[in-house]
Image (cartoon, rainbow, N blue to C red; front, side):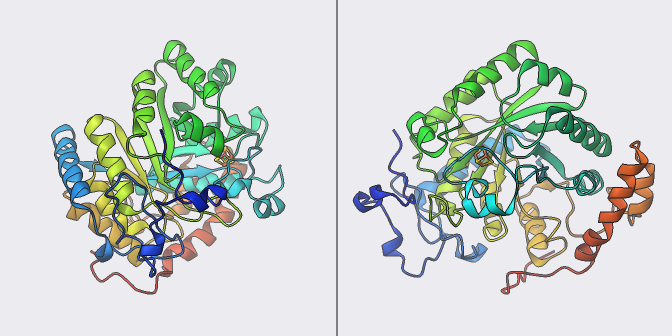
Length: 405
Ligand code: SF4
């Protein structure tokens, strides 16, 4: 069973004797270790520093074992940056931890608000040119009619030059058939597989329809890869990973994407998991599933944890804001951390060069694309804003890394 979610602001909090924040008045995010199978705590307003990350002896032993398992099963050590492409900000559901479900977000983003097609296509082009992998195309549930979604999937896969993964809730067989020319994998955002906790944090998004969709996919479209996204820090203990293991085994998943909970204003949580706890999740999953693709999510403030997550056996990382952080100290630090871990980092978010090391002429790359002219025009309209940021890297974290490559 799940422990009481450590960071949910509910009346349960009063009875929660596991809360470790009182022992850590400075809220040093990563000094808190997780010796008792607990999520620890991390104040998401603070910056995690590589030098501050402290791991329990238990976690260090787990990571050492996971690292060996990873090495034995991944001789190329190919490691990449995965990019989610969002196509809308709206979601019809009400998961208690999610920024899309907060009142303030819903006031700002109407039901029909979506990203410009041009900017999503540009991101797909950056993925191709910089060797980022499109983690998946995603957006909220109920965000747009089927025909529009199919058009996004069609054009994005064209620009990227490959079929893509999709994560937009449950899909009927008919919808999958329509999307088949453009998708190679389906991801379901399960958040947690713990049945009771899931009901609590995702009241309108039951597990069963996803369970049924993955069963159908296995039977009817075995060529489509299967993946789920899960959040660490909602309340599942390490023992509760059994629910996740069972789901991975039942549906023979190819990949999982993990995120460390990032509390949002107006949401039900106030603390994220410690690096120790998050890394121990990843290590446990790696040991159990030596060949599974494990993608570790991070964010700008947490991103110095990436080296530890790779040591714990993550295949790749995602959710680093690479377009806004292009060529910043954090970007260079992450490139350095992957190399320090002996990984073959195939992605680039530090130099405006293509895979062959040549300077990129973005306008020429857009002209080469096999898409309709009006889409090319939309991409060119958006391009200067991105290039301005790429060419003027600004560090948000004022304590700059000194160990970049
Ligand atoms: S379904 Fe996804 S986007 Fe929608 S509220 Fe839940 S977590 Fe957020």
